[in-house]
Length: 396
Image (tube, rainbow, N blue to C red):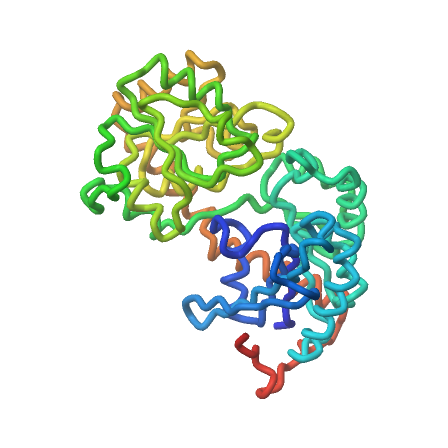
């Protein structure tokens, strides 16, 4: 397989999600380099290249690289920073030459990184649209135009949900919907509360526990959380994850709302095991119009009843097994139903089929087949560049 270079707006060591699931699997077959957004440092005197090695199972290795800039040179943090772009391209091109990377597969997660296309001269351009980034708070003014340019230029486009697919399909000739998946075995351990002792920071929280994990940002319906807490003081609401792009002072506060911060992917099952109901409490706004929450399948793998606001992709993909609340009163009623009514055998069977269909291993395999097919259609008869034995990824 050709070397793969991924340019992402997300950090590798942040929340373990779609990029990490896919690229860690692809790294079992090919060399993978993960290029993060620049960072600013008060200690940096000149821009320099920082890299570290991530090692996973089955021999998978991902080299994570980032540009470190002096604070005074960082106009803003992001791949769209024009001051950083030229330096980043030069240092990355030099590093790729050192690693014997020639004409790689280039995989973009943000259209703001399209300037790397000319710098790396890839043999195949993949654009994985996991979110509608233009709807995010603080999005660059020109991100919509750049998004369309990359869609039209990419050889293969994947989308992280059905709504995103319908929004992007008119701009790409080779686009495929791939809603995010699940590692069922990882979360199935949380199906029994007895499988894990309560983590220390939730040991004193009494049932019923309504749980959510993920990024806590402008997409959350904070008023919904506040109203549930006030109307149902006997319910404990557990919110797990980092607070991003909103003032922590704006978060709803009550004695039965508990914020315990970010947990690692490996820690999540121990917390999920103690959920009585799993929540998807997103607001209905432009930021969530194209949302396809990965956590839905993870909750289902743990056999937790799931209650969600009417997110389009949740309804379309999982509506047969997820409780949907269109109003505050309905949302509370769906939670009450989930707490009180036993799950039927028929629903468990539907859940099992969904989990099988959306396994990360199968998703990564289907994506790789599409990439290989497109690669050979563009370069018929081509043989993937063979990495010399002495050119294995060098540990930082």
